[in-house]
Image 1: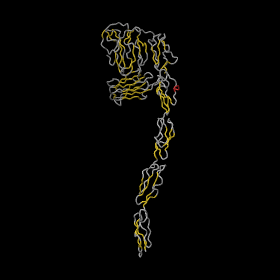
Image 2: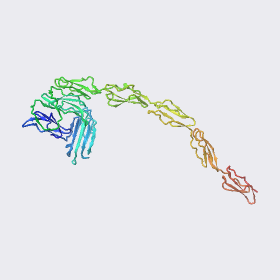
Image 3: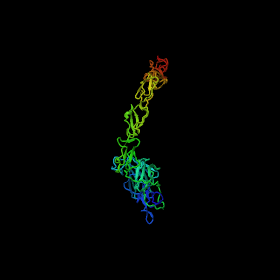
Image 4: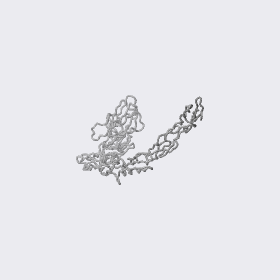
Length: 570
């Protein structure tokens, strides 16, 4: 039993000439002989020791399979100190690489695994590939318990692992995959008879040289594994010598048997041209690849053979394909120029793929102030026609709807479409509240605020000191009356009216104290008093030798007059 290996064989009983093939589990590298043959010496035994399956620590190892596993040395044990390992994963142009970190445990901050991205390079395979100077896609250090997946931007990535002298942990298991199946190697003493492509669902047929029989499955299909990656669902079969002497004996189980016998087919090798190359974006079909047979090219949906290119190639007697194994190009189906579907007041904008090519997606963008009707998004179909329906999409001008004329006001402008304006005014004595000019905007709404015409309003009139205002009608033509407190008289207009210009007529009056003035002095006498305002009293006296005739005093009344006339002194 070889640890970390599977055994491909026909059954558990081996005869002279029977062979077994060892296949290491993903992530391990086979050291030694892959195939062992049962020989007769002093007793029946396999020729040579079985191989081993080990995990290397390579420098810039190039991995070109569509799927694979990268392990740390002594995975789930303890990885060694002072390691620097690196890998370059390169898949077919046009594919991205998904990397799933299924297990990762390292000394945090000191032992690190880095994944560097690199854009796909399709025009030359000799240009520099990804390296530690490429953009960093992911850096791992520490413990990651849940699966983590990242995807490259192109068909190449560079991976680097480094550990220091201190602690070590269980390491890592990282699986990479691209959504296709790599072309398998032909079996020893055999060949690949046919292959329909590398995409999921494609099949490959194996055959053996003359004198050898096929052990295992003669066909394999590109299928998706439950873990998500794509692989051939059957192992590469064995081609066993058909003429070896058969001596049966029982043998202990060497490993997990993963191949089962099929009817023994004597598939004799004739001169073969090898597996023809499939065109990009296409497949090649053929039952046999021997002299005189043909392989037929088919393009994927949305692609067609370039004009003038032959749809098939023939295997010639010299063992070469008639086209030199140069498949015809599959070019994208194109749709007519969009001028044929031009829309007034609108334009088509590319939102997916390449303009006019198969699967290209266009979106109708209407000019400002217009809206679309009908199918807005169209796609270039495999038949070379746009997926545009009936009726044709159009861009219609936006309408904001009618604006009503406000009560006690007027409106100029009757149009309601994008760009139209309406001008409002109010009747005499009314105030416009809102937007005097409104415009129909691209969003289908009128600019500004709704218009109302309110009766003219002069606001609260200015207050008066030592007086009061009577009246609360501050609208157009409304009036208020000013009144002074007792002891004061009004100077100015007592009534003010709200005018058309929203101003009160006249000026604010004032209330001044009521005064009677100095009453004068009687002849041969005098008047006593310093204040002559309302209710004040003035007293009269005569000089010596004179007698007062009349009132001895007088009071200032509210009408500004003294209560009595000036007396006489006789």
